[in-house]
Image 1 (cartoon, one colour):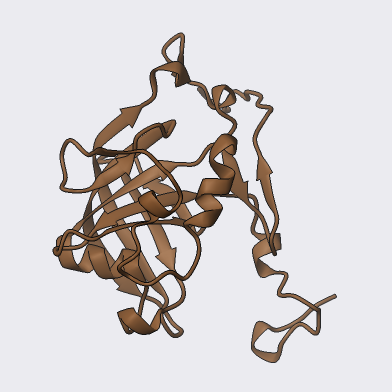
Image 2: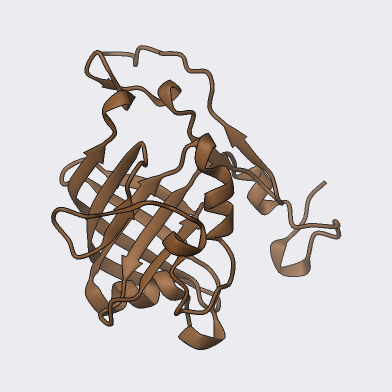
Length: 201
């Protein structure tokens, strides 16, 4: 099969997300300048640089009460900071609850019964028991082709790691089984890992 996205695929559901998978999930927490809290998962998310450490996530739709975007990007435009919380398998239901198109007044921490903690370097809440949380200062927000497609980049200025996720000095993902996003309504979980030596090193 071959198709041009501009002409449609003719399938019951768009295969694009399923092709580019699995994807890590950035559970983005933000706080508006009015003190309102937001927590939402994004699977167009990744780390993009080592020095300084930087991450990105993309928001690809809008809400009527936020104009051209959603709560996360609107809050980051407002305050310049956000926190990326890593999602473990055990938090799948809570994460899913926070993915709804809730009004901007909704506090997803409270709505989903998630314990929060204050960040150390930025004015924002984080998921208290997340395997890791990355406190970020926004460096830029880029608008991509298409309606409501925004990519937010941030420099990581603080890192929280849950103590039991460190094994012999290594952040060991098998201690918490990261949740990943696939296509459609599908998710996967990492339960195996292996190492490869890079040539020349």
